[in-house]
Image (cartoon, rainbow, N blue to C red; front, side):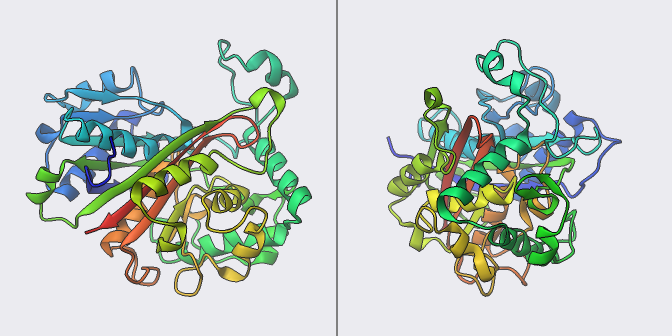
Length: 390
C-alpha cells in the first residue's frame, strides 16, 4: 500500500535553546510536544499515537506517554536508527495513519549532550556488550569522527575530492546560519578558515564537524480528514524510503550510504525526480556526510559531489540546490546527536514559506528531507521523505 497523500504534517516545533542544564530530558520532550501541538492547533487529548527513539528517557514511549498525559494513545513506535530515526518515523507515522491505526501522531526528540560535556565523537562509544560487532571492532578503538574520516579519505582517494570542496558545505551552512537567531554558530566562514581549522581526524577539520547542542523538536502528523479541519498550510507526504547499510561481511564500499536505496524508493513512491526538488534538508553530522548523500540521492553523479558543492551551489538565492537553510547540524542545532528531525522541520518551513526571508526558496512547493544514523564507516540507517505543499 502506498502512503502517498495519506498523511500530512500539521505541526512542527524546534526548541530555541542550545544549552539547557536546568531542564530534565523529559521536560524538553514536553516543551517540544506542546510547541508542535500548538502550531497545529491541537491538544494532547487529540494525540492517539506517539513516536520516539533512544533519546527518550526511561522506557521510551511507555514512560513518555505517561509523562505527557497522552490518555488516548493507541499506537506507539520506538524504532531507533540513530540520527535517521525521526525521518523514518515520519514514514512510519504515515503508514499507521494510512492503515487506520491512528489519526494524530506526535513525534518528539530531545537531548542534552552539550550540558553533559560531550565532545565531537573523538572517544570510543561505551559498547553494548550484547552488540554482535563489539568483539570484532571495539578492540581497534573506532570513534564517530574517525569512522567518518575513513569515509572522507576513501572518497578523496577514489574520486579526487578535496578538503576545499568539503569546506564549501560548511561555508553554505554558515551563510544560512547568520540569519537564524537560535543558531549556535552564526559567523560566516570561508573555505580557508575551514581547511585551516584544527585537524580532528584526517582529513576532517574542526569546522567539518557538526555542533553539539541541547534541545530538541517535535512533529505532528495527521490524517487527511483532520488536516481539513485545521487552519494550517497543508504539507503532504508524497513518498518515504528507508534502508540499512552494514559491513556486508567486509565487502564494504565507504563511498556510498544507505541513501542509495532509501532515496530511489522515496522518489518512486512520490512520482518525482531529484531534478524536481526545490529544497533539500540533508543530514550533516560532518561535511562528508552531506557530499556522499547528495550523490546517493541522485542530485549529482557518484564522484561528482565535490564539483557539485563547490562555488556555493548549496547557498540559497544563488545555488542550484539550496540546503539546510537554518544552518543545519554544522552550524545551528544537532540535539542528542540525532539531527534528522531538525531536517524535517526546516523542510516544512520551506514548504510553508516560513523560512527566514533571506533564505526562503522561491516556490518551494516540493522539498526533501534525509537522515543518516549510525556511522558511515561501519553501519547506519538512511531515511528519506518527500513533502509537497498543496
